[in-house]
Image 1: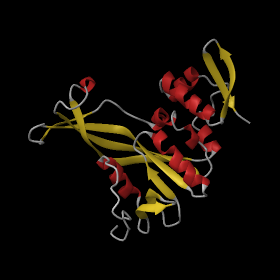
Image 2: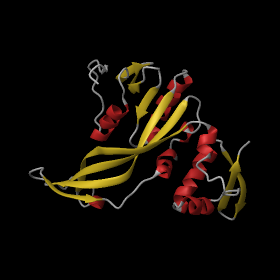
Image 3: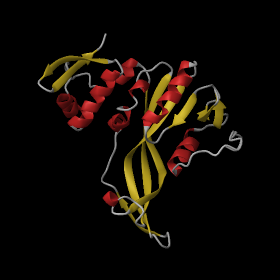
Image 4: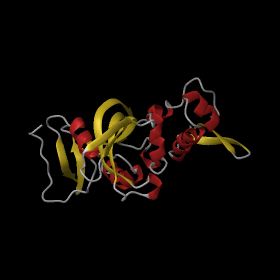
Amino acid sequence: MESMAAERSGINLYSEYSLHAQLKRHLAVPGDRLEAFVEGRVIDLVRAEGELVEVQTSHLGQIVPKVLALAGAGHRVRVVHPVAAEREIRRLDPKTQELVSVRKSPKRGDLYSLFDELVKATLLIASRNVTVEVLLVRTAEVKTRDGSGSWRKRGDRTVDRELIEVLSSRSLRTRGQWLALIPKGLPSPWTSAALGEALGISTDRARKILYCLARAGLLVEAAKDGRRKSYVASR
């Protein structure tokens, strides 16, 4: 990987957890360029065949203007978002920084966790020249209880987030690929309750899926029973 150019040119790149850099290295192949300039912007990874790859570990909404500007200029852009399907918590001694414990977190993400982020980034959905790739990963969160974290976290501070393993990936680009997230056998109009039951997820997350697809113009509201909305595919 030494042949890859890191086009930093003295620019102070923003601070990021290890996970971001590790994913870029995981995705890169010989001939790709890391931290390269395109249209006056620094791109995480530029493929030899021209695709631009941006790794966004959180806050997808923040990357929307950059992605749409590049896509509008005719570039193919891939937004890669990792979701922790498995997570371990590594705790450091706040004084010595030695590892004192490792445990598995009960929290598990899946493909549909993407929509927790997409509610503020719906313009990425089925947008021209834009692919969203979800990576299901195993990660390690390195924490220390040094009192600098919030009171909600009892003073815990996350020191780093690290990649252990990439488990799988799924790319979403076309209207059909996005709508395929709704099970074929589920009759429309679709409600959040019915979709949640069909996918084995919470009604709240199912509601986010329907909201995001509707905001992207892939669904339209069909009926409203009190406060409960239902949707069908748009034409």
